[in-house]
Length: 413
Ligand SMILES: O=C(O)C1=C[C@@H](OP(=O)(O)O)[C@@H](O)[C@H](O)C1
Ligand SMILES: C=C(OP(=O)(O)O)C(=O)O
Image 1 (tube, rainbow, N blue to C red):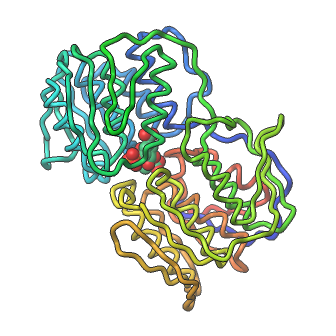
Image 2 (image 1 turned 60 degrees about the vertical axis):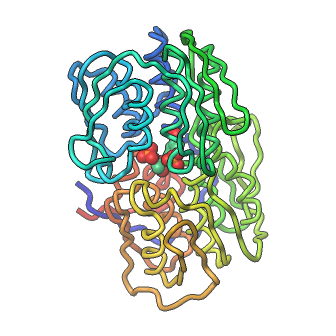
Image 3 (image 1 turned 180 degrees about the horizontal axis):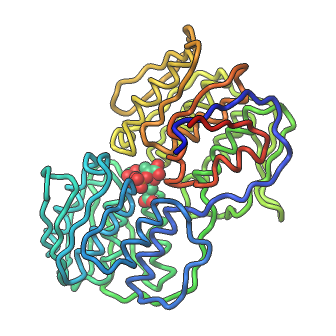
């Protein structure tokens, strides 16, 4: 297995088209909805990511024990799904998954009529689930920890005897992902009402529909970064993205305008162009788009744009503690990043000495590998990215696509 890769400096990006991977978020919702609707239709353009394979594997499995690996959506969506399927189930995941909290979802399901027990540490996977019909009704749920708990409950809610009236407390995090869930439920014939902090789901049945997964806007962000680092005039065309997307990360297109990348939809795809005009500092609250934070931290640092990224409170419970990971790894290149270690990272523009030989640790986090790789365009010597296979969590073809545009990548066994 490849332990690390050397990325060599690159001065030019060939004009090219990239076929982006399908969205794992959309894929995993559609798999749950298809199962609940007993749909005969195969989902078109399903993601080939680890996280979607984990969902597909579990739904097609004939056992009652599931290991979802590192896939957060699979863990959360499947927990809710199994809670309503009569039987006894156990669900576990990677070592990191066992450190990612799930008590908000488990307590909610138990209050709605399920019986779920922790098999190891209170509040964390692995879980034993005794599935049964769920009563439903009114429920309050903290909305500031992970939107995946909300999406998980919403998708099974039509099958609760009384439907569900869910009131979210606290500041809602990752809100666009909740909208995405509601839109997909609507496509399967169940319309919900979201007023203020309350979402009402009727008792209903999904109707099978034919579906196709659009490309992943989070994956697109690494291409905006590549174009931002490439010389003025560089263009890349991204295929498969919807102009009016349900993905909140489509906001990346607007945000990169201040970082020198203009984009426009055409019949060929989304055309990215480096226009060479860069803002003097960058500030943004990533509460709605947490998965873009790493892209922007690395982009701003290597463009020399001081930044303040806030709304990062959920980053500490993702694939790794992404706040610490960013501070450590940007530090190796000499960027002196400050953080309150809660929800914000900042760079004033100060640089210290870079390490002589840089090896970027990826902490089993696909987004660490993908956010740092484009920096080869800003380097004058090679650097290493450790454990490159992590990208398969969302974008298995990432390294092949980089090679296609001219990146020189050498495997180190
Ligand atoms: O619902 C989804 O598909 C996702 C929701 C977000 O998680 P949180 O709601 O935990 O922030 C996001 O970070 C994750 O990659 C995918
Ligand atoms: C946070 C992520 O995924 P998940 O929470 O579904 O594991 C991600 O893909 O960045």
